[in-house]
Length: 382
Image 1 (cartoon, rainbow, N blue to C red):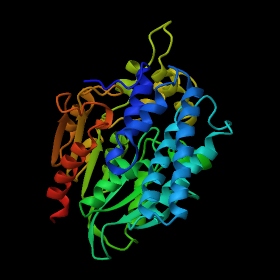
Image 2: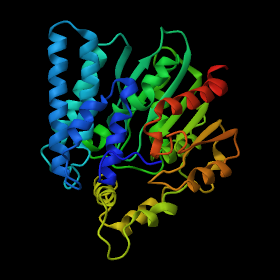
Image 3: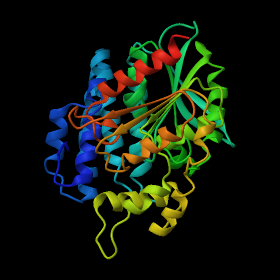
């Protein structure tokens, strides 16, 4: 089943992604549909203008509520504004390093997110994780006091921000009594926007400092630390788990075995006009990977390969699969699952459930139920 919110296939998915966070106060369906109804297919500037206007209007609502002392109204509106700013910036990819809109819009989204947390009753703190001469951004969300609890480390993928990970993992973790350390690595969020850091295939170099930092935080049980990676994180997290053995579990959301195996399917056919998805993919790759064309992208993607590495994972691993994933064929999660020699489980999300889109957008409550039930069984009960 394909949800269609727009004639432009790429725009449709990103609208679905934005409204998928509604259960965690990240969007409201009506205002999103009203905003996107007049966006022209393939028009990245039109996308930016409409989403930015919605984000700014929602931020103003939050500020009025905050000044009037309506903390809950402010919290909810700030969260929506944060997600809308992220979405507005998504297609500013022709020259993201030089586009004067990119960093200010990104920063406004970050600021709205932190104001939302300030307006909430959550026990949270901003964290800065030392990494090769810079600091990676993160948030530590504590489910209770300082008594040891299971803790989820969660990061995103090819276009994620750490603030988005609150909607896709952090809020659900808190509701289930898990602490959650959200973080971003090179190629993501502030790391690429402020520091120019690009992705790297040896993701254990990122996760090991994060685990080191997690062990300094109150309430973290060192024997019950799990790692979740979203989208491209479905490669990155298992890669890290193969080398970082302090992890009690790993969740590949969704599983990726090797990017080289999917690179050819992502490129346009010879002589064909690239789709919106393909245009965005190559533009984002120039920024976050340093590749200039499809051949270079395929060569770099070939370095992201778990062949012969997956058997080194020793912690229980959950591999998720989306039946109609438009980015990665369903053979990828199965390949990863089959090569694992640790305790493992493969969960497929189907069209009949409305959960078959990439990263199960539109069915996140179902994903959270299955993923956290699994985590509770293999980690939390220790």
